[in-house]
Image (cartoon, rainbow, N blue to C red; front, side):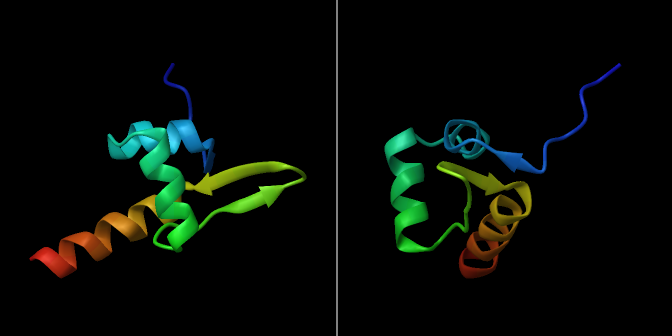
Length: 62
């Protein structure tokens, strides 16, 4: 049985989904290009934020 998709990803997992480095992912978060949330001291990236970012890139380039 496949594992259900996660709605919140670690920064490292979000970077892997976008095929970018951890450093690049943190730069995207810092610039506000990709939204994130804090849960206590843990930073998480909503899967919807990654989809929105990719959608914006496609619109800008397409």
